[in-house]
Image (cartoon, rainbow, N blue to C red):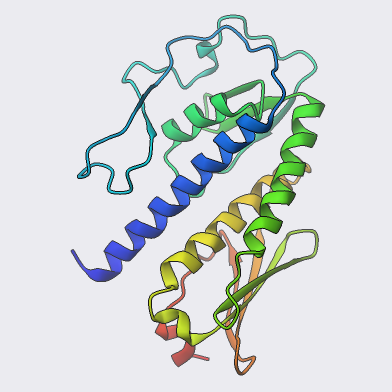
Length: 233
């Protein structure tokens, strides 16, 4: 397997783990809410090193695990707000399982058009928004001096990056995983604030010279950082 493909797999894995960790952290911070009666739950397992080289506890989705609203035995969305959640990386089955367990929403499922749906109370929405802002601030605080920094403007719709070429020496994977997590948080913030056509303007500049490394609109354009960004600056 080519090195570039391996790095891509690692970045996606780190991002997926980050989303799952955020969902479960939110669950631990939530007050106990009355949960609807549900169908069969996914099995929690730690897969072998070959299947899961990161060694974290993950969900193994049973083949008969119901991803639709039929999972809920007493489904009643009266008074709930409904949102379509774009999913930029993690597979839908895993995301639905984690979403249902997190406490983010009252109902999470895939509808007839294969959209990921979250239905929630006003309180759940406000708590998810507050957690999202706190998570953005936490990730921004993980910027590494002399290597990279993050800044959001325009109500979390523009992400400004300052990046040193030095990140190419072993820091690209971590940096990209953090960027993808910020993109996910921005997506959630925009969607929960009623924006159905969410997008993120990403501007990256060289930390030393201020030269522009990228100017893209995500998700129409994908995020990628490599030596080519400096070669084309």
